[in-house]
Length: 192
Image 1 (cartoon, rainbow, N blue to C red):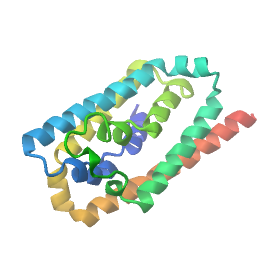
Image 2: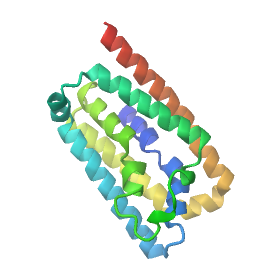
Image 3: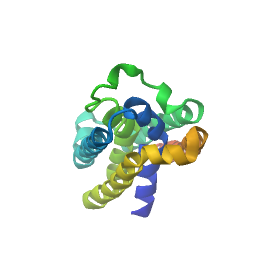
């Protein structure tokens, strides 16, 4: 379960999303900031829990092989990791969401984006992770994510902008390694 928690933490990437979250709602009053964070984390958790629950049915309905899902998930994670390494999260979205970012862009696609959805489906189908174990791992990751984002202003103050950006780049490098490994595992599964 610890491996799943680490993988989901790297994919959901609260430190990488922190500069973006602060850029979108960082100027909101404290109570509103906290309310938005808790709401968006709950929405993202619900979306990923839904895919954890119904991932098998979705793959079966679309007639997608597990190796294809693993390779495509690895490619998506690889592209996301490159974006994390070479582009700051705050540059990805514009100012259109500052008033009240319900669902978009914090819950989706930042926290529960394509890479997180694909990872949840891969863990559930290819690695045969039990539903309760996966939901528990998601709960732990989102609890940590919520804590990091709630303390975002303080973390940003102590680390400074360079420190937060360095953390984002480091998480991108780790995610890049996970992505390449997923692609290799998918190719190996398909070939053999």
